[in-house]
Image (cartoon, rainbow, N blue to C red; front, side, top):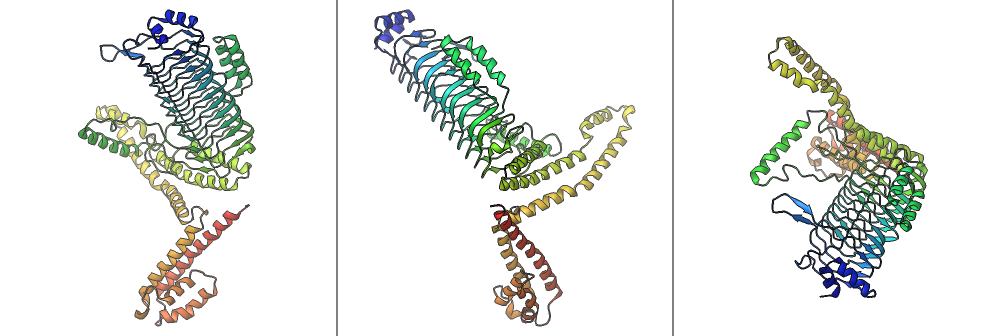
Length: 597
């Protein structure tokens, strides 16, 4: 047993006396299990460590004590709350239970936590860390670094965070989070990165918040992955200055001046040099438990599954439930301005992002970026939405792409806009059909009660039903036509972007019509692979070619010696029309591919 541990067991006053008499000795607690009954009472809160301290591979229990009565838990005394470490502190590969406390702690030198494991609700709020090393750490849900001040470098490379990790109002110099993993609802709201923010290859869950985060120099998010509802929204500069003024009042003067200086140089509405190249803004939503997922047995699973099926059917008959997605989707960059360049090249947006008021648009780089959208509530279809704000975002993005001469991106966004208009058209039609039925339950309740004063409502009910049927029939054809045209254009040529698709359909139609023609030819020539039959079909695939004009005279006599049947003549007209369209789509795709390239 080390002498430091022996002194700590006797109390903090004994430990303080030991380190004063041995100022050059390291306080060695390496590998100590603080869950041991002999060590469980040790509480370092408020202690001032004058010597270098070593907690490498130490094991700490939970800071939450469960009382004998079920459901009651009480916070035990904090472990390291309000401690001051004057020299290096090593917690590498240590293990902490739930509720580990480092709030208001001050690390004046290196704080090494590399490879440490933390349970839920670890608390570093309002800490001051000179140089922080948290690489390869694991944090449970609810890790708190709110208002933490990192004086110099801090590293969280390849660390894992559970849900609701919070770095709100934190102040960084150079921060390294490369290849880390964050759960849902991670927040860096109103934090400051004074020199560098590295999040390359980092993965974030849904609900990630960088609202009002100040990136004073370079912000690197190359090849990062974000869930849905991600926010980089800008806020006013004065907000950070007010926060820094309040924070400085609680810090020693040597640290307060640095925080105030960084806040003065920060602007939470500006991207200096931001790079999201190769990033993915996915449509992954929050993962909430449902009655079906928490059902405990097979019978309950079947019952809840049937209820879920009935709910999915029910929402189709209510304009404000199911057909209308709730809540904002996609990444939010509103209110940001760009000083140098914001690189969004090769980024994949699975929901349309919001770049409202982002300026100048010429500083945005969307080269080779891809956009998409899908419904966020049942029915879950890709390229389906009933949200008008999705349509609005696509139009704004089209304008930005046009302003920066990204012709391919502008074309792709126009196509997405047309597909979004399809769902919105159906939604408008459905709203018109159900207009006025929202208060039907009131009419029904009065009629059931037998009030004579409300018997006239029966006629109103019938008139409303007749009106809905009329609107449904009259308004049905517009959305249907729009849907059919979008479907045909998409799967025949990928909206004029594919050369392969119309060329493939051209060959398919040529052989299909040849097969149909074979049903009317003479017996010796009914072989599907007959060269004359294929030549006849091929000739009608090119209506302006000499082969097509001569085919009536040459191949008709060979294939139809008794004269061409009227059915064949009608099919040749149809073939010419359909395959002319396919040829046009091939030419259109070639034109779109080489346009302004």
